[in-house]
Structure formats: C-alpha cells, structure tokens
Amino acid sequence: MELSSTYNDDTISVPYYPEVYASAGGGAMVYESLTGTEPMQLSRAFVENFLGVSFNKNIHILNVKGDSMSPTIVDGELIFVSPLNGNGIVDGQIYVIMYEDEIYVKRIRKVPFTKRFNLSSDNPDVSDIELTDDQTAACKVIGEVVGQMRKKGQR
Image 1 (cartoon, rainbow, N blue to C red):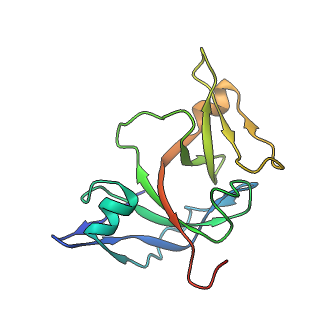
Image 2: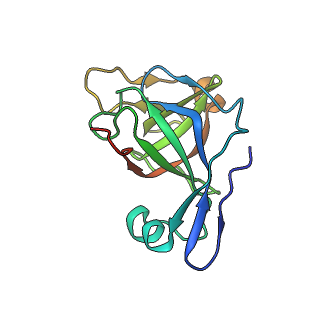
Image 3: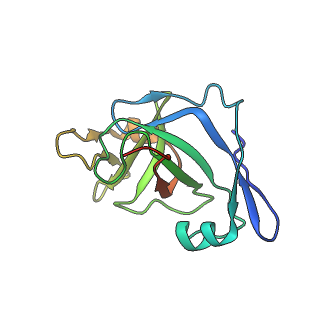
C-alpha cells in the first residue's frame, strides 16, 4: 500500500481516505479499497508544530469509528498517521494496526520478556485485546498516531 505525501517549501499534500476507518472498537474492514483519496493541503507550521513530525515525512489521514479510545480519541475524529519507517514500537503509544484484515487504532502494550503485545483501549468500559505469539506476528503496525482533530461541527 503506497501512502505518500507530496510537499513544497510551505505546504504538504497529505492523502486523506474518506471511506477508510480505523476502528476504536471491534475492528473496521478497510484498506481493501484505497483508491479514493482526497488530498488535504497542510502548512509546514501545522505539520511541524502541531503534529510534531518532520515536514517531509509521509503522513496520511484516516477516520476513527468507535469509542474504545475515548476520551483520548473519539468517534468521528480524524487521525494523522506516520508510518514507522524502521522505527520500533514504543510501549504505550497509539498506533494503527492491521489484524485479520481489520484496522484498529489502539495503544500498544508490550508484554515483558516476550515478543508479544496487547492492543489496549483507553475507555475503561472496553476490554483490551490480548494477543498470542502467532497473533502478534500476524499484526501489521501501519503507523503511529501523531495527531488528531475533530471535524467541523463535531462535539
């Protein structure tokens, strides 16, 4: 899957996938139809100062569906995702993960002394997803969530 941004000195065109949802809940079927993108033009100041990422870094924007990451990330928000690009997973950070053809936005919690991790929810009413060794190996970490925002008119 090619997720790339284009940029000049002052703005960056970031791919936004209006039909793609990262689930903050039970999983969302996505990434099978990554054809329809709507590029968003973002300023250098926004990318570097608000998101805190390098201006030339590839980022993309996804919708969030569900409440398992509430109050940190709420249903309907847009999330800015930065591919890992060889960087390791940091325990406790929020990532977009593909698992069993579904996309989740969850906090990754490493299991000490193993290669396993669990997918953790911020909402105390939602159970974490505890993965086996094989399930962890089958996960693909798409990228780290580096920012979020609510759509206009959203509470």
